[in-house]
Image (cartoon, rainbow, N blue to C red; front, top):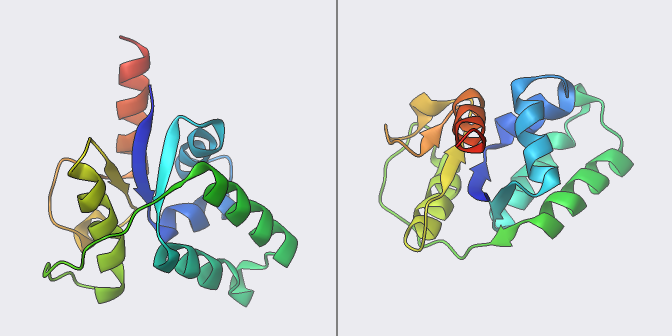
Length: 139
């Protein structure tokens, strides 16, 4: 089974900093093709900007390899700007992309900061995303 998901930047960063973690497991499902990442140019730009921060100590080669892989596996979504007010306006793009995809089929927003988004069944933590995938594997 395939799952469509917007991966919030904090999940990607957490995975990159500690691969042996729940966010790392989520990204393994991205790289294996189980999770299809939903993207747009603004999301990719934020991924690059945050991964490039000196405090994370990531080489340009690592950043480029990860972003290239995510981009090749992902689907670009042209999101419509919404009037949803979020605590951090920069998070709007993540919510808009998932909402656009949900017009066609199920999609999730995987974030470590669920409180930054409306309370919806498809706004999930990395642990909840893992539980959804594992539960469906057992069926």
